[in-house]
Amino acid sequence: MPTLLHIDSSPLYGASVSRQLTRAFVDQWQAAHPDGTIIYRDLTATTIPPITAELVGAAYTPEAARTPEQKHLLALSDTLLAELEQADEYVFGVPMHNFSVPSVLKLWIDQIARVGKSFAYVDGVPKGLITGKKATFIIATGGRYDAQTQMASFNFVEPYLRSVFAFLGVTDTTFLTAGGTAALNQGQDRDAFLAPHIQTVQTHALAI
Ligand SMILES: Cc1cc2nc3c(=O)[nH]c(=O)nc-3n(C[C@H](O)[C@H](O)[C@H](O)COP(=O)(O)O)c2cc1C
Image (cartoon, rainbow, N blue to C red; front, side, top):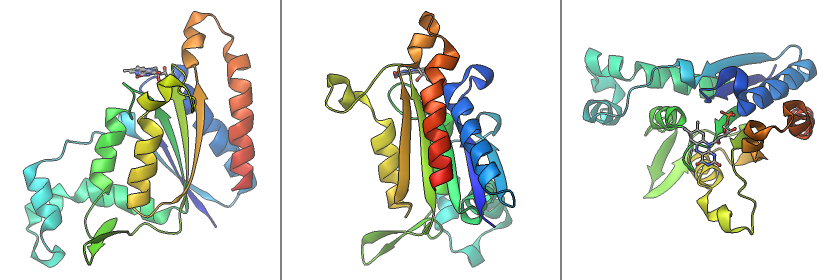
């Protein structure tokens, strides 16, 4: 029985393109895996504190030597890591914010990128510890950042996610982007705009 971890990070809820597309993906995945399990993590509704020196200290203290306070500090990180470990597949809804990922997604990454848990250095070489997973990133961008165009170098979303997840061991990744969502604010019909993207994510959800 497969488990899917579904993560959203758009603050726009009903108006969000990435949330609508992850929903289409999840509905299709569920239809294809009626006995599958879905874990949902809404990062807009999750309070994740920024990294502190105390948190770093706790993460680098050997587990057996941690104080109760240090264990408490790591509790949220432990929960988020357990969700990653439990799932076989991941789907992320990612709006582009200021050419990068939303701050709530960066805060989440800061919690799950943890020495000894999701990565290690073996003989000075980084080794990802989250292996055997498949990840689909559904990205929505107001502008367009197509390869070979001048704007492509402004897109830090896909290169960043590709690099950080590869560092953690997740190399089986698919990036599906709905570019040019700003057209929706300029009168473009939402259903017509979304139809090909919904088709793409549904096809992918069936294929994986
Ligand atoms: C705070 C904020 C920052 C944004 N920054 C960018 C940006 O740098 N480049 C861009 O093309 N669109 C940008 N946009 C537009 C979003 O990428 C676009 O609305 C997209 O559809 C967001 O995904 P969502 O609909 O799932 O929220 C920004 C939107 C917001 C709210």
